[in-house]
Image (cartoon, rainbow, N blue to C red):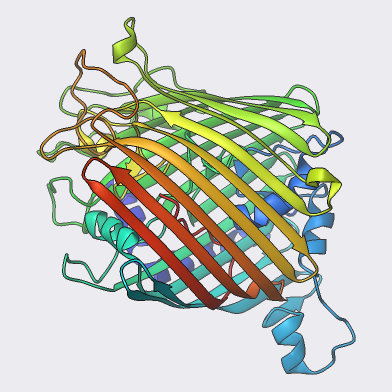
Length: 541
């Protein structure tokens, strides 16, 4: 049984990154004496992960591809080592040249432990020619990681950021006071023209036996083979989590507990800045053959307390490793929010796979009461037999009112950001992404088209997953409300300087148009900068 002391501890971890990092470091030092199967964490970003397509979507591979971040095992280690040595020249002898072009800033390897560390700049300057705005991003970051013995891996990265965004992006930041996918904006206010935020990841990974990995820390989880995930994505800010992953050959099973927050829910206490909620997630992936995989997912969101401060309590079923079939302790004043889903993947060709997801939120006898989502896509490597030419084409749709709850705090969100697709609900979208690497150069192009329904003032047509769900027989047609079309295109060209922390020079162009009966909003943005890190930064919404 977990009591309020644990709630307090988890809240303190979330709001104070230094304490968070110290806690994880302490766990490592304390537990290393009890164990000596190493499990190295690979920070998740689509830009990096798609470079593994040729390995993980090979018909000779039985790798479980749909649970991310990946843990580097013997199957993907050769490709990882290859990527981490692009352009590395062992004949370089000078310390400055080696650290700039070849190596981590700190890199220690002994029989007992390894350690690496880097400074991570992300400096960009841009121009939004539609609204005549100069944009910028000024990020100073770090990453530290390493192993202790052959069972423990730790990793932390942190970023201090200031930025000025194009109008459409700035409007999103102002509406939710969150930098999408990252953290709370300290420069909050409708008059603010800049944003200021900090973003930290910190995890400890322990593999006591080859078949089991335990991960504790502040991070995110992504489930699926697509660019988007309708089940659990990385679009919201980081959250404290405990994740157990069992690998039993053809079967992989994950259970995760998470502690999340809601900025706008009425507070019942003076502890912390926000109301809190719990999330529990199960995912079972079965590689029936090397070509065919099927998966089952479920999730439940439970408020810590109702608006009057009555604690929900921590039901013992919350730590049950068996998948849920319904809510665990729901009452009219404290409704839980449960959903389930399925995944599938089939390798139609060597290095190419079709994949899909089915999301079920509410299932009733009549079609009008149902809320659900659907994904279908294809991705792979070496398109047209061109080495390192990766591709993805994907369709997603989610019906209105999906993910929402009668009590907004138990909506399928974290810090009011969707735990599924960035568009929330009441949408359909098409996405195409091509990526080609040759030597140190990398070229990426992306196009999106989406149709969704915005809400008129004082009305809820089902796009906003934070709006309280009121059961009715109203229509649930995708695009209802203010029918809106979104056209999005983005291209980048980058030159890799150091592969160890993805330091690169990068130029990019972004074209965006949002059209409905109220008018057209256009963005034409060009950027250039010195960038690093492997984190996901989303702009395509």
